[in-house]
Amino acid sequence: MTYSGKINRKIEEILNDKITGTASIGGGCISNAERITTAKGKSYFLKTNSSHAGDMFIKEAHGLEELIKPGAIRIPKVIAYDKDFILLEYIHSGSGKNNFSEDFGRRFAQLHRYTSNSYGFFEDNYIGSNPQINIADEEEKSNWTKFYFNKRILYQYKLAEKSGNATSELKSALLKLEDKIDEIVTDNGEQPSLLHGDLWGGNYMIDENGDACLIDPAVYYGNREADLAMTKLFGGFDFRFYAAYNEAFPLPAGYDYRENIYKLYHVLNHLNLFGGGYYSQAIRLMKYYL
Image 1 (cartoon, rainbow, N blue to C red):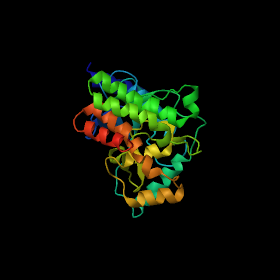
Image 2 (cartoon, helix red, strand yellow; image 1 turned 180 degrees about the horizontal axis):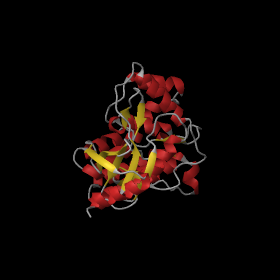
Image 3 (cartoon, rainbow, N blue to C red; image 1 turned 90 degrees about the vertical axis):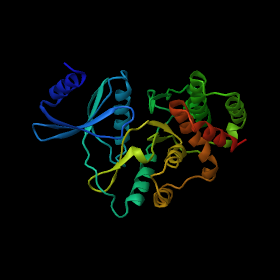
Image 4 (cartoon, one colour; image 1 turned 45 degrees about the vertical axis):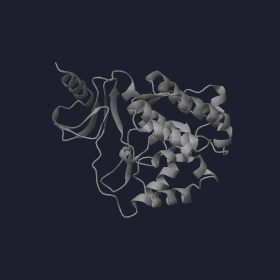
């Protein structure tokens, strides 16, 4: 039996329903995505990956289940998952309603009001196909600056060393940045917020009601400014989104200054994933503070 045939057999047993049709869905760069239909007239979203055996889908499922808890934004319901697949509620895409951006901004602010007592998450997960380290030591659990530098910036730098992307220029900038990190990343007194972790224009969709739906998370609890900075890297969000967010949950003073330090994590991750022009972008973001 083929790889896909084995997964389909497993899903049919879980659903107690027979798969009668599949249709490929484009857009994914890591996994295969399909819409499956069943004899009972149901539709589901299925992701599989034959080359990435491991716990990626398990971690994705846990992240989606965490994002559902606040009831702030629509999240696809997790139907089933295993090491080689994740089966989700199928959400029909639509067009944004008239106040889409404002509503999205307010709902995203509501998501960030869902908090934890400590930074990180109960497990590590993934940012793209790279590991994202969320298990914090006792100091990092209560110190955002330590958590962010160690588990985000420093970890990505170590990946760059392994992949050959860490030049002497990058190392020198990192050491200077480390000396200033306490001045740049400050504790604003807020509780750690639930973060999507990887929100850009390709990681949300518009559902049949014209509302936002979040997908493909890299969940952890952290400073909400980190989530917002990511939204500004690759587009997909307009000024109305940010204005509505800030009205619903005003940002602390100095957010604009700190934005580049939070972009840096994702740019370093893209450097480690794709190389190329992300190196010069990472250097520019670091030199902004040096």
